[in-house]
Length: 300
Ligand SMILES: Cc1cc2nc3c(=O)[nH]c(=O)nc-3n(C[C@H](O)[C@H](O)[C@H](O)COP(=O)(O)OP(=O)(O)OC[C@H]3O[C@@H](n4cnc5c(N)ncnc54)[C@H](O)[C@@H]3O)c2cc1C
Image (cartoon, rainbow, N blue to C red; front, side, top):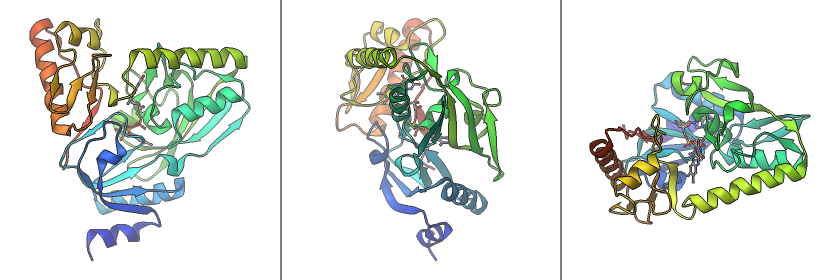
């Protein structure tokens, strides 16, 4: 029996084999994964991930792929994608329960329609709820931590536990799950009732700011680097004279130097080489080592 058969026997989950990861990342680069699974429910996700864990098959969970850079060699193992396939959402008073694959922006927009406030500033982050909690995604001084109530998490020993805000140990672009491993299955956010007009106004204003400042018409993974203590990555890159600098199809955005963009035909190697070039140039000129915010995933 080959790997395909073993995998398809694990659960009724949908499978794609030799699937190009460029189709599953916002950078639109990355070679093929041996297999990509799309569990249709929490039950399927738990069964599948526990089976992969027990069989010792290399695997990784992704959401929208909006903070990931896979190499051109792809990924030897199984990618478990939790996005539209697991995206139910429900409301009870001022608490939202969202499956991990629900988009953060959909959760924010549906909340807005119910007059619920709290997610306006983070509503433009293009990831899934699971990816946003994992990363403690944030924008304009607000972060997921501010509205997070608790989450159901599948641990590596196969148990499912509930982590509250304290247990999640959020800090800058980090959480207990990014530190210790585990899979976020669903999340509860605690919002508060506000005036619909104010919520809409705030969301519109922050969407406008994003469109004005960020190259949203180009493939990217958002800010390529973490904010270095006491500096802004984009400003350092611009001051180093790298605005518009290209390697192959990868370019430092002319609109926002903190973003590396794919001009259309970039490979992951182009992007990686450009990231290294930016790091070396900024280190040489300003003595600051930029640390990638984008997660670089090894092929094997
Ligand atoms: C145009 C653009 C703008 C952006 N703006 C912002 C911004 O303002 N602020 C910000 O913080 N980020 C921003 N980002 C980056 C990105 O959207 C966030 O980091 C987002 O939270 C990633 O979510 P995702 O679903 O895409 O996760 P992925 O990129 O798919 O995965 C990121 C990490 O989360 C893990 N993960 C994903 N889902 C789960 C799960 N269910 N359980 C456990 N682990 C999981 C993955 O294993 C991986 O390690 C931007 C990206 C783009 C393209």
